[in-house]
Length: 406
Image (cartoon, rainbow, N blue to C red):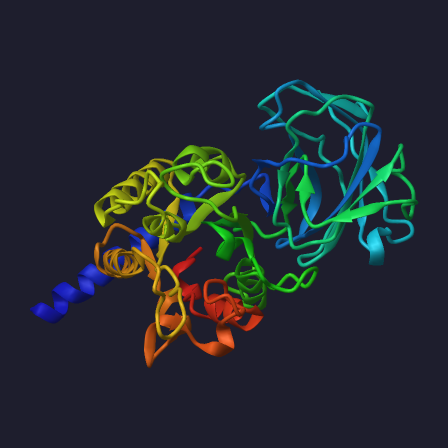
């Protein structure tokens, strides 16, 4: 009798799962690359300049469109002469690959303060793992608060005057930040295509990974997904902000502030990998911080709120344990021991609370078995907080791809 009940239950679950999969909408557009906007100070004026920026796609498509942003601007932003092309070395573009971008069939656009604008669709086929160059001209204007993504770990260029359509730039200076560029979306070839958003801080951002090598853990995850035919239609959007916190503003808006824009508003989003909280916990060691008395209950309550918001939009949340931090012998810094206790309590909650749709144990993947409060030396970039390229790869391999069922 028990066997029959189990078989019936399995059949019902299988039928329900198939029905749910069939009911999933086919997304007309899916994000293939993204970066979380944040305010950033710049030394030089940005008016009368060409911005040329390199992005690494995670999903193929038969057409694309680009999102430009003025999210933190205090005045309207004028952008003109935008182009997209295949990337070549040193900020150059591959011959014959350049395409102009338009906005409502115009080659210039004014983006209101606090807003973003999506380009007209462009019938330009692109492959996954393509490196594209997005170029645009900012006419002479005052930009008090540029909207950028500071830790791009990608070499981008700013050149004087209007050089957007030039094969290579003249007199350009480089920076490892993206500015005024929020996303690249594709019309997917795969009918099951969808996006995974990786939400986090500097570890999601890829801090201390090799510049221009695309060795962040979301990049490594995208490569693993593309290599498996069951998951090849899934894009990965990196929405990490270095220094980001859950409860308070850090180097950018908190996770509670930016969740709707950076996760729920992403085209084609179906999953989010949530790796946040280490910077909040780190504030315990700063007596002047509003989070110096942080408790694990505050962190788990905020996280639960975000999971509920995701579920209301049909987005599944994969909870991730926080990585270990600190050298083998610990730190003599006040509050370090309590920070470790809160980290361990939070990780236990992630593993056992049942709040998440699935869990990935990044902590276990990189921790030193003989000193669990530290990373294994082969995975440590050297600062005892951020992984090396090998550490980011270990994180990606710790994710069970079967959780991303189609």
